[in-house]
Picture 1 (cartoon, helix red, strand yellow):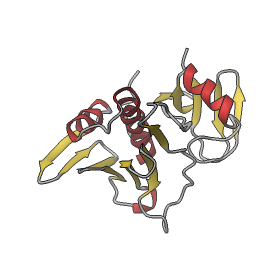
Picture 2 (cartoon, one colour):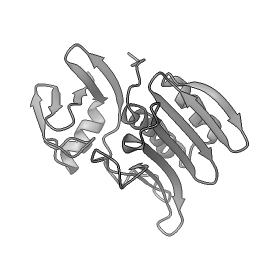
Picture 3 (tube, helix red, strand yellow):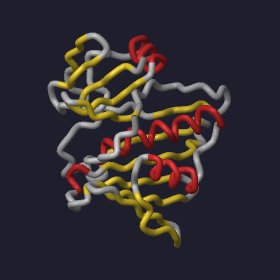
Length: 194
């Protein structure tokens, strides 16, 4: 189920990063600007403008700016213009490491109200292997909250290399009940897809 109500930058940034990671891992390259534009449309954002090195998207509560260059930058901002919750997705080729890197960072470190606990995506270009363990997925809204939905492979990698008691979104404490967990700090949940 696609979550139509993108309410906060994190609910756009994480699913977008997941789609970009998939291209980076399977094709050993950064996604192109047109691919990222399509991903943003898949996530329910309407493209309002494209041209002169920038594309502008909007859903009811979120605005996204895409800057396709040699590296890719996507700024995701609340439609209110409040920069304290804005996030920046940056994807680039690190020539020194010979790796593709994707990070989700606060667009404004001084005013950001949350804590981004997301591990960067690192894809080694020599081996094609994912060298990091980011917990990425799509969001679903349920009666009891909004959940980051992860697949079994992501869960297993997370268990092997991380602490599944730590929220992948904010670094807070997760309280698990079966296949679902809720973060005691940010309020988002994590759910394992069957």
